Image (tube, rainbow, N blue to C red; front, top):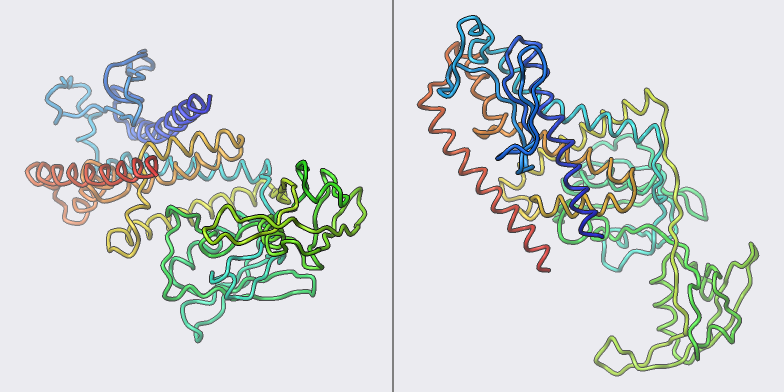
Length: 463
């Protein structure tokens, strides 16, 4: 069932993104008066075929779904017979500005789709974890900043890369995903960021300084986890095990454990570590039951640590834990949602371009490149999490597709746009000879990128 969900989600994602991309080319071509011969989703043998419109455009769905194309009337195509009355409608007869607009329309359509999807999510509302911090691991940036767990992050200020640089304005944080997005860019750029938090003692500020650190956004380990940031979770008793100390001491299934020996419990790890550190020693757990707080004193049994080789004894209480993260529904009005959608699309686009540049210069790992296997995996995961996650995934991949196609590599839209830019500046089209040579270079570049992406996909599967 999981594999079927993944395959269906991947097919839907690729289908939607390809259709919108090619509709961009198709729509602007029609507006410019160019005759469109075929609109194809996929490559290879047609599975479905029909004709529509005054020009009898052929619409096809083909066997290989990884892409699509719009075939326009073009006198340079030796397989086409161009009737005299249609010559003015050939793609090659259009001005350089019309050709530029037609080619650019595909990536632009992907960006517009992302704006619409993000805006729709903003209007409908997205349920996300609140930005409350769990106790960070020792040695992480979060721990060095002084975060101890339980702080609710309400804002972020970028401080730049040096102490003398001006402090930026505070940006409100409404959810965990909001916090994640506010941190990813400055942390990768080696900058300093101030987290504004609400604590039990009032308002506090914590500085994360990533200077000299190396962070990738999409490495093998979660980006926020490497910073030492994880959402705080409420810990409760999920199951009482026979022979343990938890049941006889008075713990019940469903009890929420809020503190251990007076120290707040912001994650299951905090409680587990405390129990393990008390073999044969009494400890007091503060639990919330039926809305009221009460203390339960118990003595963990001392048992040999099965996870270590030293034979040391650790404490166990005979209870399985359950965790639940507090959530918040983030929702905006229509106009604000559109603005937020456009801003998020721009932020993701500019970040993607910078990351690609860093990969080229060696400042970021090539492991950030992903191929169809990883995309299919994330499509399936997001679909299983819910419609809002899948829509957010579609928006992200749509932006990635738009950025990829704008790269100035021959055979991609960006390569053709580069030709037309040269033609607009010099007044002369790039010669067929040069285009042919550059096309071969472009194919090599695409094959190299595909090989790296596929290698990364297979490495993730094997590990």
